[in-house]
Image 1: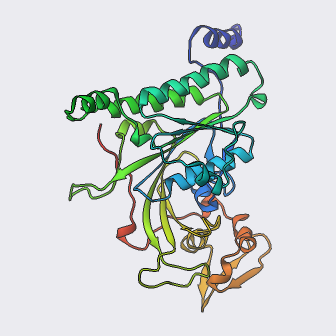
Image 2 (image 1 turned 90 degrees about the vertical axis):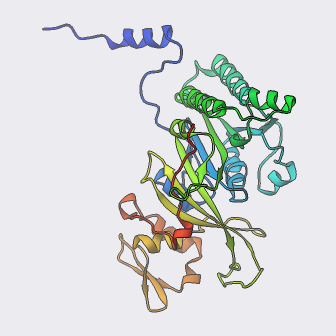
Length: 365
């Protein structure tokens, strides 16, 4: 009989002698809510989770689409509530303390560190320095005892390369000839590999721009295709005007109450990709966590219209719930469906019009 192979020696040799190698599985054990139950579900397959630690999550969209609201606001707040230290890297000099505090983010030094940076090299050095210090102090501790860190970059699309700086100083702006796309891909790839077996995660915002190609009209995500491929989670966002009051009544004319962000999860390994949800973000009250759930459940067939009301039949008890649409805007009612809704119930979500269609399209490197 052949002698059994002693894998323990090989495993120790791998991790000891080769830098950057880890063994075993590193499934996420910590998730951070986006503030939207529906968006959480489309990303993770769970209404209460959201984005995973140990990964790089990207929220890309046009200006004013709600990217910073979700990432620097909701996600940062939810992370702090779980005891996760937030390192917020501001590349736009736009994250004011009063704005963050208004969204519930704790700006105290023991809760977060805000860093202003403008170059990819600087951000890479910050992340590398943190991870190096983290490993030196905590790598020997059991995983559950290690502190958790979330990096937030708002936005990664504004980062510059040395070529950008040199050309600006010389007054000769010729473009960086693809260097930024290559550096972003290298940066994100390194982060994904570094974070894998650590309690460290990253959430970034990025920009999109309108396509000039009549044969390919979908919005483009800046940073190059390599950057998108290297990222773990990618959400594409589109901005529309919110013309409804808190009771769901339509407003007219110039009476705009906020933004309606259509979010499409174009890359995820934890749920069905290419599903969308509309999230309302009123300027006065902020995002309602159940925003978008009604449309999601209706389009999936969980909620069916019967007369002027909408009906749901409980899978567990067979009990029938029937309310007018406005009455469904209630957490306790929605929770009944959320507790029974699964991935198998989720069908392709068709948006109301072609104008609201969001398809992943990346800028070629």
